[in-house]
Length: 113
Image (cartoon, rainbow, N blue to C red; front, side):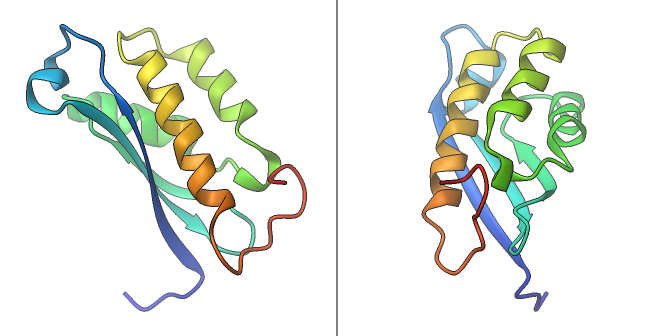
């Protein structure tokens, strides 16, 4: 793929004890493909143990623009996800947002200041 309009970023956090994914990974990672100009999440994934959970996260976050901040995706997660990894996903999203704000040459006017 040679698309300079898309960037790939990742955010990380520690998983809580006793989770299925915790036996495979010590950390939870949320990755996203973003439109460089508008910060819109085009695709999103995470290291949850089940494909169903990973697809749910993708559907939940796809379409949000990080230019508008991270509050709306976090609110969507808080209102719709009731798994043990909720706090770890929120922490990974915040880390992902930090990585987004550090990207060079992105137009981050708006909420990403």
